[in-house]
Length: 81
Image (cartoon, rainbow, N blue to C red; front, side):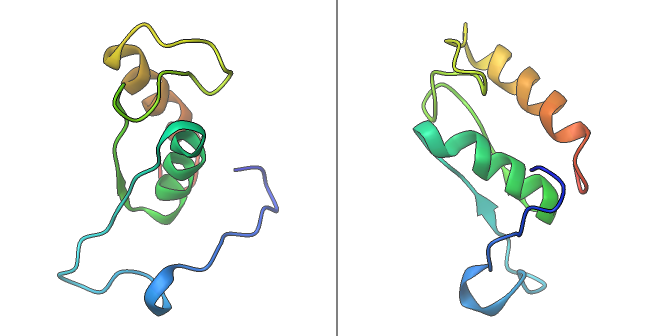
């Protein structure tokens, strides 16, 4: 997420409570923004070809390994990532 971007409010009144795991998951055009949000919030997420066939820049992914590698690189520079 770009610096200064306001984070949306979490549903149900705030961050997850102890003992209640939360996984943020997006599909198609929402896959990468949701993955970034999950990293910033310190929540679990996932990515795979069943979620999106495209990399963040719009190029087609060659497979799950490329999606996962891209996701790891993408979130490594984010707070919580």
